[in-house]
Image 1 (spheres, rainbow, N blue to C red):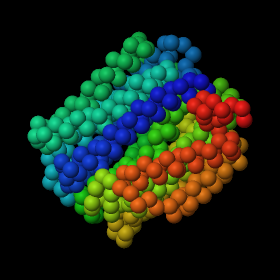
Image 2 (image 1 turned 30 degrees about the horizontal axis):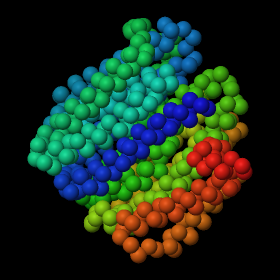
Image 3 (image 1 turned 90 degrees about the vertical axis):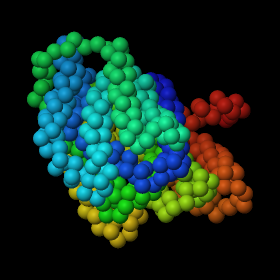
Image 4 (image 1 turned 120 degrees about the vertical axis):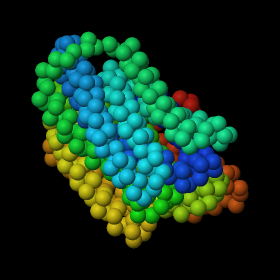
Length: 489
């Protein structure tokens, strides 16, 4: 587990920095210098590119992780990597031809509710292609267990890019046209960096010959593609539907709240970058003890860290919004609590998703994703009309709870394992007790001072309780290093 801990730590640092910069972009630079309308426009365009991206990658980036460890020779590995690159290029070429012939119809459809969306529609396909190829090369790095630089480019780089462009925009160095074009060029710079680094770490002998397991790989890629399309729909359909049913300003309010809630996921995003190839290897080797160990430990550690983040976010929410002076954005305060509950549940699953995706039961991913997508569309359609952006949050929570429950049931039935233990309920108990206790504590200070004091109180209380209950070996070792007197215990 050493390599997991080490790379997860570095990945956590880059993701934490990415979230800090992203938070500054989302809650200050965008609202202050672009305004909610233009912020909503950019967010909606990027959301649509995320919907298109799975069509281009066609699921091959995930096939690389699943099948690489089962390739017995370098020649077979190189054929797999070559196939994972050429298939997205082929799909993109087809999409480009379709776009060329039906350009006006596509643009008019996108611009139905907002003319500016149609004007900058070219960003959608451009960023989707860049992101699709980036994911392929990034997964080349992950299977070689070089996840740190790729994770830096995936998480930190786009947010730092937007931060830089927003500053230039704020000082009049860019208009909106220039901002959009520079954003696209930045995504292609990221792609260039990951291509160069990937080829330095491992340069395959490119071949047009099909991999030995071609039919299995294509079948897997097709199912993952359909699942990924549905998953992308789940992630971004709420923003798209809010812009259509309500206004683009509401997309901005909702996006800020979702961004804050998503902070809870960052420990998982760091861990999964390195743990997914190890799960695939354990499955391919039939190593049940290692698989169980990976599941239990990842679930326990992620729930513990995410539980602390859940408390820090939701108990400081009012002070945070007051401190950054978000004004109208506070209408989405309730969205943060609702969605963060779903995120916390997801983190409690540990690497369960990786087990399903990399096992012979991967076909269930398609059915889970399709069900989620249909449910998300139906729930958002009605709940947004009835309750506005709060309805979108409830729709998200309902989908998360249902699908996660089905995933737990699947793994329990097929593998006879689950992510939970006595420590799970102890951790949840700590989260509930501290949430209801500290929510009654008020500090009559400046919002920033109150936020800092409450955060110190939450962190200290949570850490002490977790240490006394011995909820994780990693926390015991970490606290013993920084507090030597605890070694006597």
